[in-house]
Length: 426
Image (cartoon, rainbow, N blue to C red; front, side, top):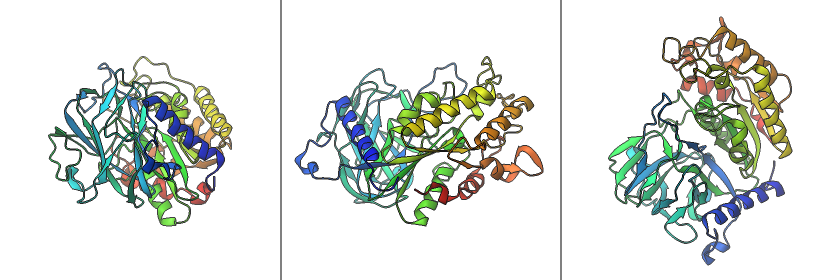
């Protein structure tokens, strides 16, 4: 959509109002904030996931709780603005989550922040907030001019035991943990690091005129498995950089990929049909969603990830696609289908052997046939970008992370460069 449409503006207002009610605050309660821009757009997102049980054969990689500790997380935004606010999520928490202090700054190397860039955040005018189970909290706006593609550092201090029940597992970005309240410290010396995100689910900026958002909705190939840790070279990152270089109307790219995500069933996050409202339809000024999901529905059953799950049919997954198409259209959004990339030999010889079989490849082909059929508002043919022309069903070795499923940074770059920006234009 061009400009600040009634639909986009009302959605942003609903999101702000809902968060204020949930956390028991008035978001713009301070007189100094009342005259500020009340129109906001996401510039970065990380889809919230619940932690999984110990029976799942993938380690979490971070502690189950934080106590009298500061967690500093880094995120590269897509578009810039003159004011910033963050979104913290306790969506999967069973108990209230207390944030004792929160800060945002320009990120420097190894967990440090750039001198003079630190900004304390407040929630309803208070430096701390307690977030009920299941709720988000949006910070008050802070005057902080940030350029597109800037790396921001967000520091959260937990004065009480904070159960790490709401996460984003495949962050592919180093986060830093230190004892005590170090939220404002420029020279941050961590006691430990992790590559998973916890609690932080979004960064917003005041919406520039005509700003738009595109949501990339997918699994690990959208989330960035195979990209460089701290390298910001996932395909949505590369797409965001292309859009910035193209100039014109600011277009935010919101990555709502979850590694292991499926269309129909849960495990590493809830299924696509269940999280579509939260991750896509509720995003302010979002007019387009790119859907790339389904390979885990096909690959997981019968391998070590889901040995007892029945194999879905192509028709069942396509029915899920059709529902997502209808729901996007009902909300006035375009939905673009991205074909599933080749997975021949995926995880062969590993604990997840059986992820690929010739019968599963037939399902992938059927899904891609549907994606190309005209049911979507447009098609991005990632399959044709990654496939080995000499070995159909298999990826090109120079684009392979090494597991025959996930692209490497070169593959992600080729995927992003293949996208016709004209198709994404308003």
